[in-house]
Image 1 (cartoon, rainbow, N blue to C red):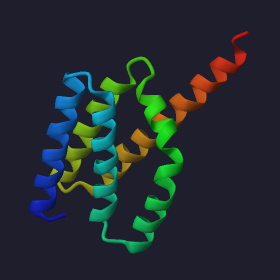
Image 2 (image 1 turned 30 degrees about the vertical axis):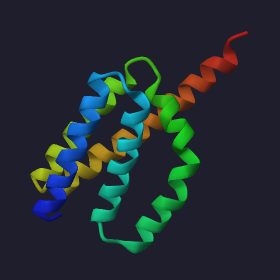
Image 3 (image 1 turned 45 degrees about the vertical axis):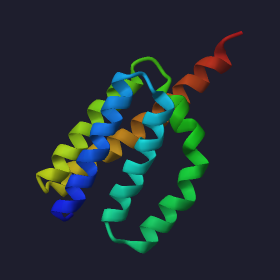
Length: 121
């Protein structure tokens, strides 16, 4: 990542934190989507970018749903801060681990919530 790439991510992070603090979930989510796309784009891997762009719309509703789960929104903000810190430190391995956890956590929340709703009479 270039210094300009880091600055762009920092600006997006500032926006999601502001939207979080103001309780603007939809605005937060839209900037969150941008952050994920920007990070993928920084890899400068056209196959990865095309795959991400094809899959993202398919999981958009589930990702928004997960943010509505108790405590997930705050957790997501913290995870984004950690990912940004790792990227700024040029620690690709740590950034990858944090990003993988972030994505898995969202999936786990969606799966757990759906399982609970199915079990409720």
